Structure formats: structure tokens, C-alpha cells
Image 1 (tube, one colour):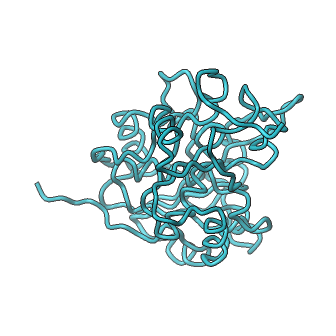
Image 2 (image 1 turned 135 degrees about the vertical axis):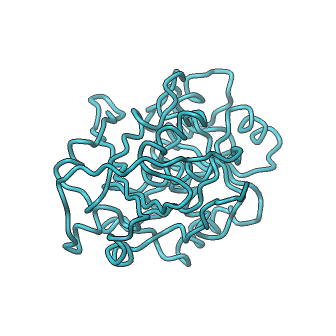
Length: 292
């Protein structure tokens, strides 16, 4: 059988580049936005962004609810990587196949789009891009929006053997003990330090360093910082010495933005701790550190 794997594309696509190709028949655009609201007493509520999508989205875009559509329903934790068969069925129904090209975006910081980008990559699909700046930059530039729901014709998505981009606590625990890999926390400094506890015990995975995902993005446009600035952010934390990097956060979402930035810098050996602090924090057997 001839291998019809899609050809890799640059990880990012600009708003101007995307607008120029909106009429391409192979293009599949997906809004991956989720609504995040503060929770009284700390933490956040995370809900579907479908209502926001229905109010305004990019022309031709479909909607992916990352929790309802692309998370393992059998797992006790939220947002876990779905099994291959489920992922393939979802992508096939959404019209993603070997001859298609996917562009992902969301409103606010880009981590929902980067999460789906890494899931596609995990299962062997490389013809996917993240819209740099997402819906925020698209709106700032006055580009066209639509309210019509989009449904692409179905296709046949074929999963490849998993690449191991998502790892479990056993892998992370080994990295803690052996100190042979970098472990990077993508959350805000106050959570990393333990001054705010959103996931059970306060603090961080023992031996990890902090590089908040928000520090990798322009706060106005939500675009990634220039490569030189990204390189400086990672280099000052000693993360560009060639060793494998494992990123984590609260539930494996924000961590994908740090991992994506490393990919932009050409650092291929990067993993994401899928369960992150949702699993690590409540388990007293797993080593943690705190500044308080």
C-alpha cells in the first residue's frame, strides 16, 4: 500500500497567510476554544466554548470541544489523550484525512490549539498548523468572521503508531530520580512556588523549573514571541542543552504551549506529562517541592 502520509508544514501560520487560502478545498479549520472562569476560593471552571464559536468564528471553521470530543471518557481525570480508535473516528467524522490540511486556533492564549496539534502529531498527522495569535489577532486586524456552523465531508483518518509525545507519571518519576531530563512547569509563578494551590498539595514536581506559558506569548496579540526571545527564555533556564524536556501544568493543556515553543526552536525531544498536577498533586507518594 502506498504511504499517503501528509507532508509536514511549518508549525505556525499567520493570519495573513490563512486568509489567502480560506477557499482551498483541502483546508480544515477548527476553533478549539474553551471558556475559563475563575472559581470562588481559587482555581477555575473550564467549559465548552461552543456558544462563543456560534457567536463568531473564522469563515469555514468547525468546532472541537477538547473535553467532550477529544478526551478519554474512560479516564478518571479530565483532558486525557483519547485512545487511537476514538481519535481516528472523531477526525474522520470531521473530514480530516490524508489529503487534508488542518489549521487550529482558539481565543485567548493558544494552548487549546497547541494541545490538539500535539494530539494530531502523536498519531502521525503532520499537516497541521496553529494560527499564530488565534482569534484574538484575527479580530484585532478586522478580518472576516462568520456565524454559520461548518461541517466538512467525512474522510478516513489513519493513525500511525503513537510517537510517545505524551508521558505518564512513571516516566516523570524516573526523570525526577535520575535527573537526566528537564522537567518544566508551564503554570504561573505563584502556583509553581506553592503560594496558590489549585491541584491538591501546593508546589511543584520536585526538581522542576518554571517557564510560564504566558511568558512565551505577546499579551496583546497572543502570538508567539520572536524566536530569539523564545530562545532566550529557554536558554536562561538551561533548557537548550540537548536533553529531553518534559513539560507539565495542571492538566496537560498549558504545557503544550511550552512544548510547542520548543518545537519552534527545533528542539524535537520534548514530551508532555498528560495528567500533570491533576494526578501528581493529590498523590502524597509523589515528590513535590514548595517555597512556602
